[in-house]
Length: 348
Image (cartoon, rainbow, N blue to C red; front, side):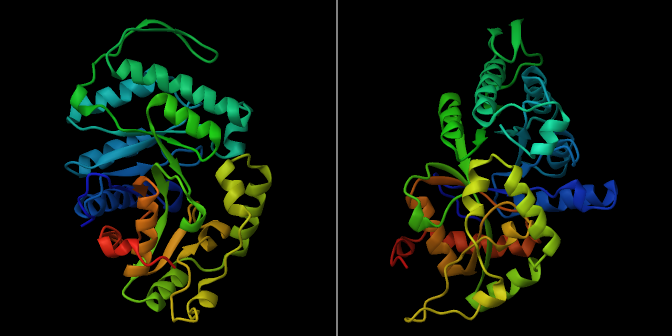
């Protein structure tokens, strides 16, 4: 189980429909991952949205039906849905199931997805739009009668029915590492979520971070698992390079400036004092397997890296899609080490 600490919340991530041959197999995978995540003590589970996958609200209801308490963290893209419709989804799920959802407000997405919808709004203006969207959405969820005339939406004397039980008010996150993203999160009273750099290069991570974890009893075992799960993918490397050229994402640009080796080239490395290699790893990102950095190594070593993120203010961690229930158990062990007083030192 993930440690029960007031300043630590862990979310997992739901599978994506594009990775499955049919809906029956996909729904089975969603239910399985949701139950694994709940059993491991996760607070919630991120549900992606983009043009190429199933509707996140329908997936969120599947998560609710399969579990007892875990909160779907629904990715909300303003281009897809009016803020009133999003608010009604939240209140309707709460009213029908007595369960809360969480909201991950987005500004960007895949560039071709946005262009296909006729949206070529520049980066910073997209965050202004997300801010306006969030202001209307959250006012409705608070039970206010909303009149708003803005750049993107106009509503008059608008109220939400059914009203939301205040005890089920959603946790709100804003994805974005750029100054515009952080400003939008602050304006909405939301938790900013970032893709972190190595701990040595971070100083203020107040909010949430998106990271994958592969931890085992030894570094050698962890890197072996990493190599099996994320093999070299030439097609993926080309897709990554293409995405880098067309993306205006702050985090995408930051991470793409780094190059990380394949796991077979890392596994046997040791420092002069026998220390493990740095756990911070971008190979899966560079091969288009996933979009977040990974921490790979022994429970203790990964735990020390996680502890340093905690020291820098990170209080929420969104993990990558878990490969199995056992993988979540391994990750939870690393988080247990991260919460020990001894994890704060030494720093490598």
